[in-house]
Image 1: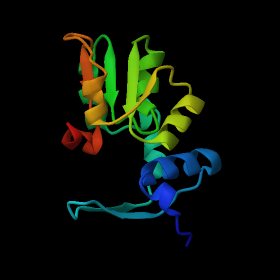
Image 2 (image 1 turned 180 degrees about the vertical axis):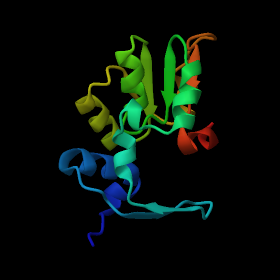
Image 3 (image 1 turned 30 degrees about the vertical axis):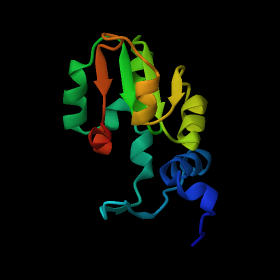
Length: 142
């Protein structure tokens, strides 16, 4: 087992996305958040799945997406890329530099590095987005 240096610990999911992107091998993780929630598994590949591999619930929810989209907590960028390819203007927001690298390599066009606090500084006018997409655990970020 390899231990990450301190500079990577704050970007653990981004490092996992990046390593998966480069090597296409599952990575086992066990992460405890500040609120003592523990997340563990080895399914980083799910963040790279295409639409046909998404759960039925995800596909159903995403049927309501319209217009200009803010993909909040975009991760590896699979949702942003899907909607971008469908012709939507998508802004992918994530606080991970490594996730940002992966999204660029995957072809996501508009990527913003930042978190929920940074979002306020962007000063989007009311109505800037028709859909704000917050998949998986990202709803808690808002």
